[in-house]
Image 1 (tube, rainbow, N blue to C red):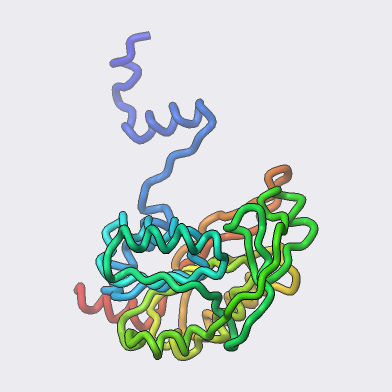
Image 2 (image 1 turned 180 degrees about the horizontal axis):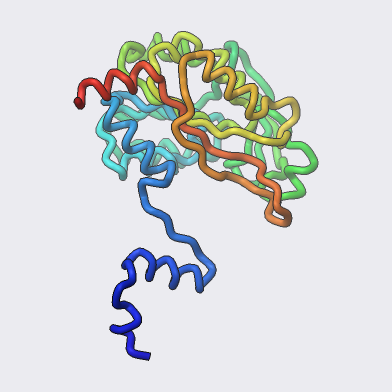
Length: 258
């Protein structure tokens, strides 16, 4: 086959998509990803502080910094093993990064924390049998009492409550409680990135409709949804990642750019 003739008249993106599809993969433009939408929101809204709730080992925060964010990053992680790695990464980054060994919830207290084989699945809620069956990393290996604080109280103590905020929540079924303890902080927050569950993966957790409703009532609109966790052995979608933006803040930024 004459490759030059075959390529003639074809869009470069079409050629790439075809080749990748043949190999069993799918390619999309960067602008059609949650990561790119996050970059757009951080830049356009002039976000000064990113709050990473459920930071695990700092993977998400590292991505944000790699993508050019220059402000402060405050990370919360209650799992001792994950926090140890998170703290090491914070020391290697910049003085504007802060890691706190605690969970966030609706009130200040101590609570039982379920530590799973894979630390990213650990939660203040116990995984249901279905969850453990879907992934070995979700099996509980240990329980510990850990500290929970309300985000509102922590932000008051931090001295950054008046700055432009971006809130990310990835707490394995504890999203409702985090939001209940952050009512004042939410009023100063321009965007929220959150993991939304479509089915119960942790006992008593809030599902997508409830968390979605809490955010829209607080003045946020959905800006992007991206597929998250799915049943690896079936067709069912279990979780999606959502980006919600305060309509008032986005409208103000649009007028400024115009």
